[in-house]
Image (cartoon, rainbow, N blue to C red):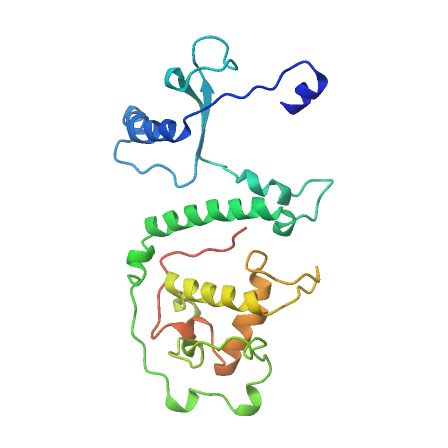
Length: 264
């Protein structure tokens, strides 16, 4: 590692790798053989995993070898606890107990977000809520919302004002309640509703400066969290109709297929 180089006991050398060819061979040719050998030929590989490769070319592994003559051996697979190394600055340790996403350098955060987005999209497809299946979740009809409960009295509608309404128009879909679902366990939200809210959040924080209560920093699309979303979107938009957020986005009860207790 770098410490050995600094101490003068080791020398840093660089070798060239045809990474794209190596990746293609590994995923297209080697992985199917490995899965068959493990007795799992028809099973999907994990969404997020790593493989540590060791240079097994003839001679010393640190000696430069022509790309065409390089050979690589898998030393380890990791599928159970894979981290995104770009997020290490946000890893709490005894000497840095209060670090968070905001402490990740901007360039590293961009890469981490890219990796996370790739995994998220793949996971969504596997769960049946990918782009092509976004509207596939079953809907269960409930009684129509009584007309007299469609809008609250005017004096009750200003407790949580929509702070950003003077800069970004409130989408029509959030201006009225679409259904009445008293059973909270039937208020599941479809992925499409989350994506629509995400698009609105990104649009708003791009032009509306909202300061985090604790850090006093302006919230951006990369630093926005559930506390900000609750204050800026959930409470103001649902307060108008005195309903849950799901009842703004769905036309009937929606029974959940998956329940996520928390995410970090």
